[in-house]
Image (cartoon, rainbow, N blue to C red; front, side, top):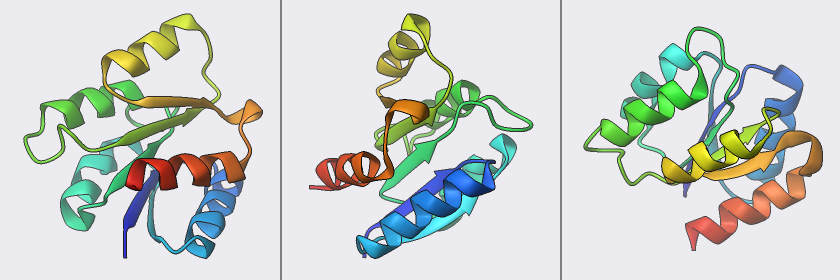
Length: 120
C-alpha cells in the first residue's frame, strides 16, 4: 500500500484530505508542525508528501529545502497544498521540484487525482 504523509495544521483540511486518500486506498499519516516533518519522513518513508506552507514552528518552504538536501528524500514527490498565493510561491514551488495547489481553488477530488497521477 502506498503511503502519504500530510503536513497540515488545519484539522478540518487534513481530516478531509486523509479521508479521501484512505478511501482511494492509501495509508495516510499526519504531522501538524513544520519541525516534525523530517523526523516523520524518516519514520514513515512515505511515497509522497502533501505539504502546507503555513505550518507552526517552520515554514513549509524551509521544510522543503531540508527535504531536497536530505539524501533519502531529495526526489520525494511533494505537493504543496496551501493558501499562500502568487507568482513567487508558484515559482519557488517549481524551483524546489514540487507541485503547487491553492487550497481555496482545489477540491479534495483534484488533490486525490494529483496524488494518483504522481504515484503511477
